[in-house]
Length: 102
Image (cartoon, rainbow, N blue to C red; front, side, top):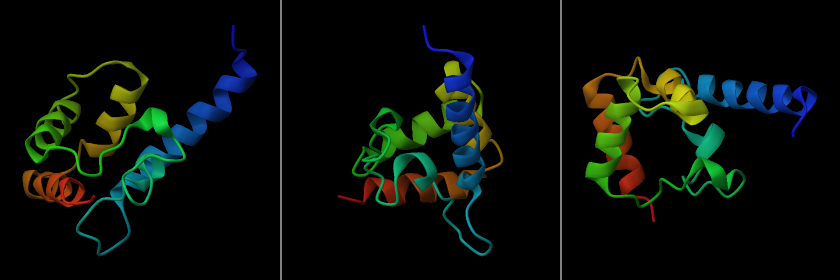
């Protein structure tokens, strides 16, 4: 069993990454690179999932599910926190942006 001493730094890093999802001032696209990488390929954290080139409709759907808090678990909580304040137009822009990455 993994000890609490190992879990705390990992959770802290994930929470920091989730808070970075809001992006830089003036950016229209939230930064998802904290977990998914700058290119959306999740090479540094494969468990975060590749979002580059993902189906646009799926990305829109899953982001709305996360925003509504309908997905449970650690990733669900992190993603809900990351996208809960994103409006519909920005959510669509995020989905379009990552869907068009190859």
